[in-house]
Length: 130
Image (cartoon, rainbow, N blue to C red; front, side, top):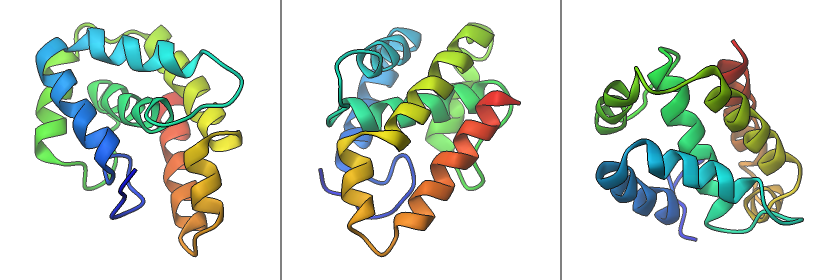
């Protein structure tokens, strides 16, 4: 996974997932959350796609991340009427799982930007719980 920042969409896998979101809408979100619910340890791309899906859900619920890309905001607006509290709960659980035990979490632990990445995930979890 190539990453250029700590944001949920600042890596190759999540950027690729956006293409799926553009084509399939809520089905792409549901698939990303389902993938995050499987297995013992989350591996790429399931881990980063779960965070990206969580950001889309939070934005669709009117709680976007500060500085979220306009294309993601537009996609989230389209899903606004279809996103449910269950989506938010599943996304929150997925984000907590990613933070606790995933390949991307391990990679960030080895980085000097670990605290920044964890703060991003914590912020997402908070916005999904609101």
